[in-house]
Structures are given as structure tokens and as C-alpha cells.
Length: 233
Image 1: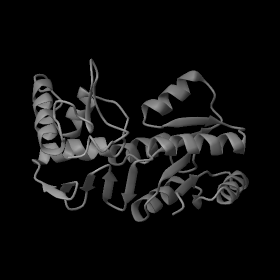
Image 2: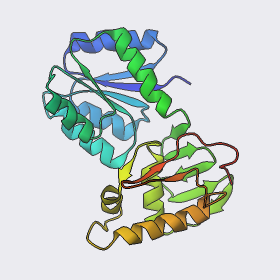
Image 3: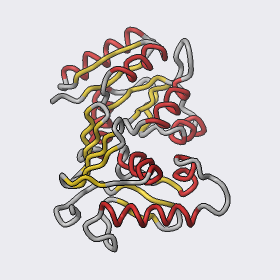
Image 4: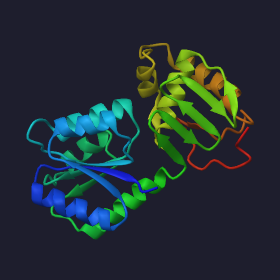
């Protein structure tokens, strides 16, 4: 099935050129020209990657990037005429996966899209159902299956797992994860480690050698990217 790319670009000529090129590359493309259109598509269609212009007529692309990232792990590549390092860092800190400065080569854009999508090669998103290795996380029903086996999680454990599984390989700090579950205040870092330990016991084949919930020492945690047969329960 063709990957579905959302192109959000207010320059109509550039929007059409990019969209036509990506269609030739084998992608399914939906194109919009403003933030309102982007939000409507994201609310109603499953998207595999977003090409997002920074400066839109009705709102900043950064605001959309931030809002999307707070709810979803869909990859985002920012498109902008801004070339300062500060702007690039700001976009990445808001959750963008990559950054293209205008004018850009369509071949380079296509190559970057392939690289970003490759990071999510094990991730299958079908509306609200996310599959990764032996994990199946239903965001709508708040249910989790591991290798076909139903697993009962606490609400906090589910929030943490759902957050991590939407973006395999991305490292989240302890503070970011605590904010996700509404426990971001002093004294709760140990509580987070306890939640993660319990989560591993429920979903990992060997909690002492986890494949899903990976500790990044000194920073926080991430979802493992390459899930082997040995990792599966």
C-alpha cells in the first residue's frame, strides 16, 4: 500500500510541483494550502508523513507541528525559507524530524522522505491501531495485545506505552514522559522508573533484556526500533 503524504504548502505552484513529483515516486498525496486544511485532513485521514511549511497564511507551521507531536508520532519534515541555525533548532525542538530549506532539490526531498519513513519501517498505523513487532496498541479502545495475548495495563502504563510506540527510536526525557502522564513534578522520577519496570514485566519476553522499553542512561527511555523474534513474548 502506498504511503500517504500530506503536503501543507501555501505557495500553490510549489505545492503542485512537490505533490506531482511525489505521486510519480509512488506515494499517495493529499495537498492543502493552510493550517485549517491540514488540521481537517489530520483529523479525518491516516497520514504516514507530513511536509509542513513553516509560514502559512492562517497560522504558523510550528504551532501545527507542536500540536501534532503532542498527539501523534507521525513524521514531520519542515519546509521553510528560514535558514538560520536558531530556526532549524526551534523546528526540531517542536518535534520535526527533518528540515528542508527552500529552494530545495526534489530528489533530495524524496531521499529525505525515504530516510525518515525507514525509521518507522516496523511501525504500522491503521487509524487508531498501532502495530510494532508483536505489539498491537489500540489508542481508541485503550487495549494492548502482545503476540496475540491481551495484556492488562494501568491507565498510566497505557499512556506511557502509547506515547513511546508512536515514535520508535525517539528518545524521551524523564520529564517529557512525566508530563505525558501528568506527574511532572519533583519526586516522581522514581515513580516513572517503577511504571516502566512494571510495563516491561507485562510486555517483554525477558524484562532484564528488554526489546521494547529501552533505557537511555542519563536521559530517559525510548521504544526499540528493530524487534527480533527473541524480543517477542
